Amino acid sequence: MVPAIGLDVGGANTKGAFLDGDGPVCIVSEPFEVWREPAAMADVIASVVGRLGADRAPVALTTTAELSDVFASKREGVLFVLEAAERALSARALRVITTDGALVGLEAARAAPLRCAAANWLATAMVVGRTLPDAILVDCGGTTTDVIPIVGGSVAARGRTDVDRLLAGELVYTGALRTNIAAVLSEVPIGGEPCPVSSELFAITADAHLLLGNLAPEQCTCSFPDDRGASLSEVRSRLARVVCADPEQLADGDLEAIAGAVQEAQIESIAGALARVAGRMPVRAPVLAVGVGAFLARAAAERCGLALHSGSGSPLPGEGGEVAAAVALSVLGRE
Image 1: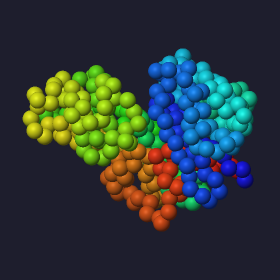
Image 2: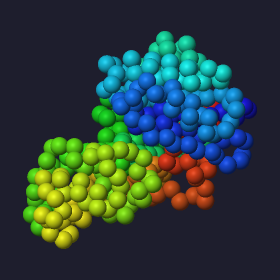
Image 3: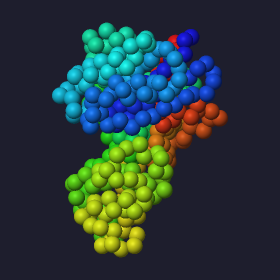
């Protein structure tokens, strides 16, 4: 087997992983919001791969960046990513994972770009199924949450496209970092009374979880709506704007109540999808929670009365839970 790099090109972050035999996994995650400067994508890919230090290793790629509205269509977006990757990795063999679970060459990917859109979840589930044959993988990232049933070692998802996965409850558009709070809930408690929220993009879920202590600033690989930082004073200012206020206009505990309501709404949303997927499983299976928002996935599993995976080791090599798809592609790519 030839060691390979796994590369996950997202709309807001580009992630890479390299697993050389049974040694440690090298992981790189670089924030890159493609809509701000799409022309820089090739440079970012080259930077991420270069930082892994695996000279000339082949690359297995997945992309979700195609959904960014900088592209007129997902087809255009996938082709843009493939072109950027080819320019960045000209000296390396490059394969792309499809929603059928196959790793195909660049020309085959170009011929059927929609088959290569948003297959990152499948790569992760395929690798998890090898050591955890009956499970529900809940990968809660910065933007979305995947809820993937695994039965008898095989991925048992009903959906393969984003639309079908949304319909099946296997994709929940809520994440621990980038989700607009106004998209999570329509009212929050202020002074114990329900208060409607502004529909503006004033604060994101990272603000709520920073205030609650669920996340550390270094985990917030995202930009904030006001382009300021992750200090508590900046967090509190953004959260106050959710109800069109400044912190000094609110009572003690109001901002914590807003953050708590956001967390509760996210847990409830994930739990609803998880209950749907679990109800279709032929066996009662444990939940494997990964991703930067794994704390939300664990809480959702507990709410559904589902056991959490408690094995001695992780089904994913190394400490790659927050970049699961890249780690999984490094495993698949070396085969």
